Image (cartoon, rainbow, N blue to C red):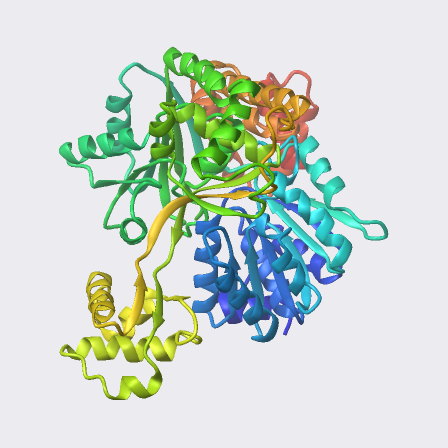
Length: 615
């Protein structure tokens, strides 16, 4: 079965999107490949197809726990076996998942980067038949990347013991970041290929508006652009407030952020995907990997911290190729807020060192102990205990992660766990009062191997489907079974998780890498300046500005952003399109004549556009 047949069998598509087939063929030839595709370019297919065509198991490294769970579910729905390892799982759960991956004919094992260096994972490497090492969000391995993760550096060590090609993918990489990714992933004797798609989104209209009344502008845009939309804000409270105001104005809207329960987030996401909710007001926790091609509108009401983040989030509009809008609302206050955020995002190194010690004190960890320990962490309680400012502590923890001392995973979903504490023989004599309790018990036995010997995670949706009950009913039935001393029941939870990378260090011995701190601060400032330049300038096409930032110098003005419209370039584009439509046979010849004629009077924009058509 070739690549197109594989695509048809599992996804139902007859053809690939631009660049997908080139990336897949390169991987099938056994070459290492770095693929840079814009948001909506179909990156997952680029590694899933070749992995299905080759014997063995693909290791997929990704930092996005929600995305890896979503992809595992999507693969299993297509009859493809997949598993995941991430923060919040117990050692027993990790061991079981690795054992299944090694011996259970699995095709994909998704791994969060902090798991790569653990002794348990390393102990399975020799028996895992790895076909490919897939590096998703590959910009995280680069110190120049906007979301650098030190745990990603372990992939380089992994390559020394696993002889398998690499498929690295990202949507946002400047030329410097791309070269750094290749340098960090390369091994001697293997060819590394860079495949980069053009970043133009011809159907996406970039609009920037300076305004004092952001709500009024957002409401006007929602009323004038039909279809589904996303509105991004940085504050959870503002998300709730704005969605309420939109509903009061007759707009179908809801809110989404990481503080909601897993069930509520899943319900709202599905309702939005079905079109029951038109506008989702959210933080950047929403949208990653969601397969909804008909988003017509993305509005940013806060200034994004970098062009990379903005390009990725705005790119969630119009993935079906139809006309869509990316609107950014701003005013001078946003620039002042950005300056304040820089000071919060980079607290002094002395403060960070103090938070390191307080983290251990809070969890009663003495000096020279703690390596490998996984801690459930409540940021609010921690700050209240020490009377600290929440935002500064958060960014101190972020830097402790970037400097390699901890792994800090926010708002991790810890699934429901169950163990049957009665023997099989005893269960035959038990007749629960409620038949549904018996049905749940039977489903647990059938669906959860090892449940008599260990506390195991359960798939609530699967149990609910088998027993025809709601999730809320299932929780009540499990609780009643626990009261009857038939099972041990640990309800699902949501918590941040911190993993300690080494034993607690004495004050003064915590290496916070001042050089790296300075480099990260400088990178942050440069990205903030580029973002400020994007909104403030009114002379360069918005699309061209972004493409130039990512190293694509030869792009033509789009003709339909706010800058192009204000300068009349959209009229020239329309005239050209009408000309070509009415002269299909002689079009290129006539265009060449216009380009070669010094007295044609064409604007620089038109000349550039015509030259692109000729080539």
